[in-house]
Amino acid sequence: MSATVTRELPREVPLTGPAPRPPRKRRWTRFVLPAYSGVVMFYLVLPILVMILYSFNNSGFKKVSFRWLGFTLHWYPKVFDKPDLTAALKNSLFVGPVSTIIATIFGTLIALALVRYGFPGKRGTEFVLFMNIAAPEIVLGASLLSLFITFGVPRGLLTIVIAHVMFNIAYVTVTVRARLIGFDRNLEEAAQDLGAGPWTTFRRVTLPIIFPGVIAGGLLAFALSIDDFVITNFNAGATQTFPLWVYGAVKVGIPPQVFVIGTLIFMGGVLIAIANIVLHRRKA
Image (cartoon, rainbow, N blue to C red; front, side, top):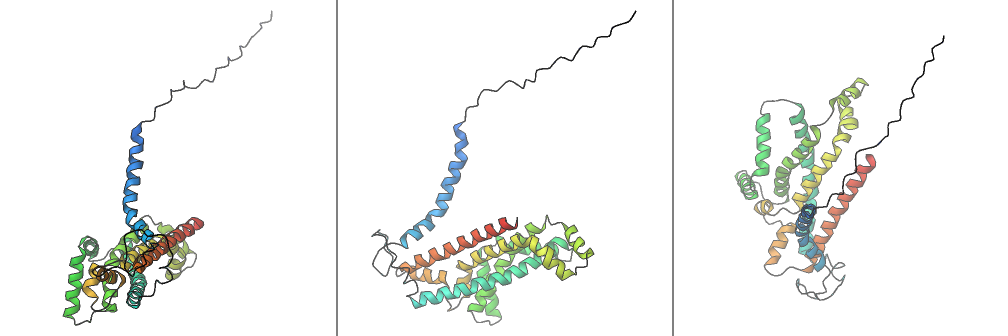
């Protein structure tokens, strides 16, 4: 007698997901933060837009007229018609890059020392950098003025550069230090294992990785230097920079060339920022 064995095939389990949820109603509050951000950004950009607008105003006068009298490019070819304004702009364009380069070099080295090494006075150095940023500009300007008078240093372009380097170093150090905190030291050790010396390791490995932070610190230092008024006013002597000249011109009437120069400086900063972003994306 033979036994017949029957096997039941497994039943198919229907693949059904969770029941669809009803569509959620979008609350009006989700528009609050974007609207608030847009209003704040417009408030910040409004003075710059006004400056750009009045650089094209057909006032027909040698002083700015805040009545809109038509569109013109008349003032752009005549941007350098005022010799004293041109001289002040040249001083600013000299002080800005020179102080930025010096502050960026020293700030980067200080950031490397603070992140990687322990040494006596490290906490004190960090405290001095913080105080440099937190202290009012009038305090820094008056302190530097007292220092220059005490040592008999004549005030001029040299004292302006020294003053700008002094307050820019702290900003560069903080920016580069933030980039260095997440730095992987194993990359440097691997380069040294392959025969690279300290300088080659820094030039080929360390610097390219922290370069975006260095550039950011340098751009911040240049922006602070090119429009500084308070500290420069204390230590300029008879030398005039672009902000000092504009402050003096307010009393008698601002020429339209000021708006033109301001527009050109702003557009130059925008182009540099865009170029930095494009370069960083290409490297990424």
